[in-house]
Amino acid sequence: MAVVDQALRSLTSTAQAARPTPTSTQADDISDVAARRISGALMRVNHVGEVCAQALYSAQALATRNPALRTQFEKAAREETDHLAWTQQRLRELGARPSLLNPLWYAGAFGIGLIAARAGDAISLGFVVETERQVEQHLESHLDRLPRDDAASRAIVARMKNDEAGHAASAEQAGATTLPAPVRWAMRAAGRIMTTTAHRF
Ligand SMILES: [Fe+2]
Ligand SMILES: [Fe+2]
Image (cartoon, rainbow, N blue to C red; front, side, top):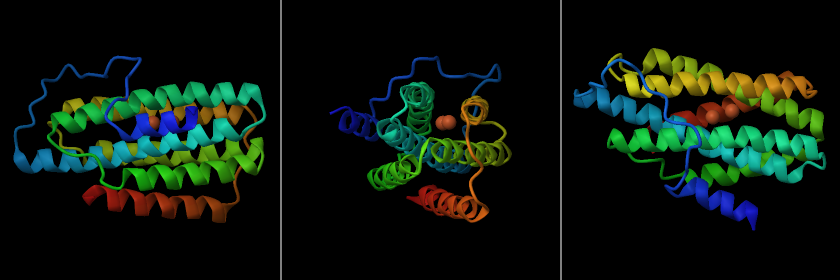
């Protein structure tokens, strides 16, 4: 079943990127142990974000009855697969491990994606816009927090940030509705729980 296959691919280390990993012209010179640890923790958080993106888009593509929208979700999901593969690869290079709670994150995000999709296409798209905007802001904050020397992680995060902005823009063009403020706050709170937990576990 496609959904199960997608879940397994997100949770095992086999994500294949279609686009090459973004690189920087600056030499990757992150030899300081403490800096490597910071980078590892931040890239683990970003990897969890991409695991959740797989689950959300997979659930939303599954649940919509609109073939054009399904195609759009699948296209965004392919870019998210690149993000997943890049962050996975970077975690390995930094000698850091992915979150132990990934199956839990995946299941939670899949459930939320289904709820969003059941609420109808305009709300489902509104959910994408809000999620992608929050992720974009979060990645922006990581560009401040990542060690200066970690050019490789920074190049990946910068490209992901651009892609997420593109996902939000296409969802908006496709007819997204603005989610009510309490829903947006709840999403922000959920995001905060996820990022704080994934930083350590
Ligand atoms: Fe992403
Ligand atoms: Fe995205």
